[in-house]
Image (cartoon, rainbow, N blue to C red; front, side, top):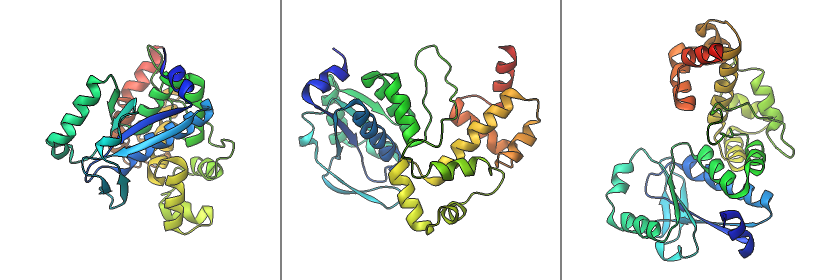
Length: 270
């Protein structure tokens, strides 16, 4: 029985997101947004529970706090996502947290930890609800959809003008101006909002910070130019806003696990 059929019978899905002091907000917000949207596309009701060893307000590394329940409310959870942090070793030595994760594993709960939150959650959504819903969810949230199995793991730039996407037009504009700085202030001005309000609204709708979204655009456009043209790597870095080729190289390794030169060689070989 698939997760999808199981959840459809009950009319809801229950996702647990495990946080701890100084967790990274993006690693929680990204998967939460993906599962919310994917469940609605699938016609089921999402139930997402934030859990922590000590219930109450848990402070993220950004200073933003989330309200978490204790481990006692985890009975119905079928998927547990452990968020990331720069201070993972501290959380990993918490005996209550370790015991809880081990207990969930013995119950057969699907458990994962976050490296790249949105791609991770999209892969799970594809497993639960199918590839089409995962793709629609990715388009809605303006993130990448990574394919499973032996298919290419290189993302394709998703259509930014997704139906109902509040910031789709803004991101389409940004894609045409990647050689500009595109600071939060620049984007907020283009959207006709204050920088503070824009940042909050953008994160709430897309599950990504503005800077992360712009980096995704830079990476994807740069990848396309690297693979489809003979432009110098330095030139690609310049026109896509990375400026420094080394900075672009690091971004490629994070996103694709390969350098720009490696991707170009692979594209030419194929």
